[in-house]
Image 1 (cartoon, each protein chain N blue to C red):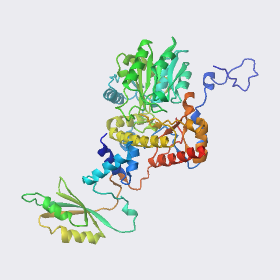
Image 2 (image 1 turned 60 degrees about the horizontal axis):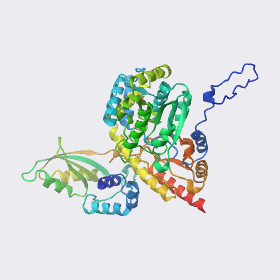
Image 3 (image 1 turned 180 degrees about the horizontal axis):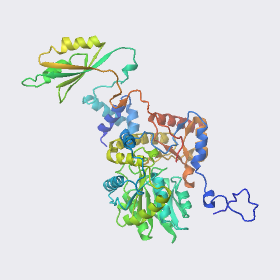
Length: 162
Length: 402
């Protein structure tokens, strides 16, 4: 058993599992589980733990957008310098270099529509090397990281069967 | 066999039995009574089920829906869709290293239950003995009896990790023995047989010229070794083995009712006759779903298998911590803890636990007399359910000690 892989798989599904929980699930000792988690943390493989939630159920009116960005690549470093520069904005939650029609895909979170629009107009598109942007505001989330939001599937089972 | 006077007008001169006596004298499944008991209670955490808690993977359901949209609503060949039989034979060859001919050596049935029934009826002459191992699935002995065969149980024991002991098996063989029925990974014990143990059974089958019925329904749900090997892959065994399998457990498709049998052409052809006259064919929608399961259900199955394995580790550790010794089952999705330390019988334990803690497990005696002293707890239920159930079981056992 590749212990690190198994533990990462468990934590990816439920980040709140304790070392004792992990030990029970993988039939190993709690000490071994704790040691392995500590190593994954110190190696920087596990970068943090957080909850995931369905924002649509929250009163706050935050707005999220996926923004495609076209860049002009630079000598020595390609897209890296600009991508890092964009990553520094706290509104920018994720940054990916992608294949296809655009070069970067960003996930941006703002207080409202205007907030995101201002960010695009005043911060993002004026960066040297940014050729164009295309902003997609997210309207509804159905599934994230393998989890269905408001999953209404259910299964009727008899309580005792052979 | 006892003749039961089940005709209310038995004062007539010529007594006619209203019901078939070989069926009327069969006991009802012990699970049924218990199910009635559970049904009357509310808020029960059930470890009493025998099916996956996962819904059939979407890609499989989607293909069933698409087949309906396309208008696939007819009968299929009696043996089942040729495309499905080809896929099954390819799958069996890849995973179990035995090659079967889709045209003549494979039949698609309504669940593996029908496949087993057909197999038993196809080979049993009245009075033939069929050896099976207990504790076991509830249908084996009745199916043999309904085929006018004689069921001969061999007990498996905890000290052998519930594997079949070749010496016990050999002792049960008589000149009338026709076949051995194997179910590993085993419901309810979770036991598997390794290569060496399979060889020992195969040797006995060859020595006494016996047929082997291999119910492999849980084979993919093997946790500590590779997939449970098929006895038909051993030398000299293909011609005397009926390989029985289905989609219910590994692919979470119990409601689709699709199983199959692979075996020698003469036996499959005889099974086909019974199937043809009684069932005609398995439902086409479910056959289309099964095709998709083999084509692209593998990754989903692996996710479920891994989840069962994790739950198994949790449930077994907790039973042992509760003071109920429990072996680590190597397959299926059942734990079979020893409840004798409580001083209760299996039925008492299950009934009291249900009444006092609202947790349902199945008394071991539902699976044969030698299941006394054990209960079956299915871990195909959510991790939260398992943890809560085991918390209650721990409290229950502690209360008993007071």
